[in-house]
Length: 78
Image (cartoon, rainbow, N blue to C red; front, side, top):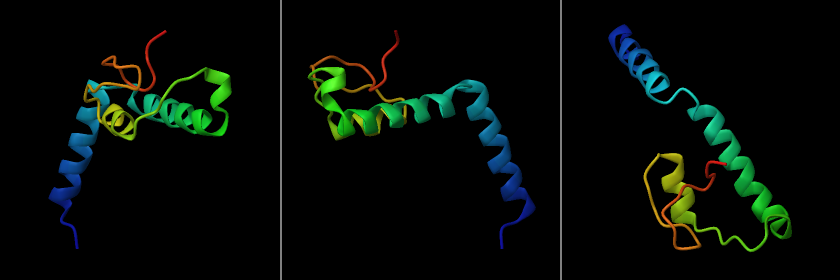
């Protein structure tokens, strides 16, 4: 059984993550949608190679090189 203290830590750190990155849930949702759309309809977005490592690191906010050899997340700004 989980102690009340452990739940307090989970809630506290969850709140900290929301304050550091308030749009993270929206970013993860849109990134996942973009990756799914790339696999379902690749011609819509041109020739954008998707690398699994770039997708994984993008979800944890860690920089990595994408398929076009540029350090950028899966869902870039703009």
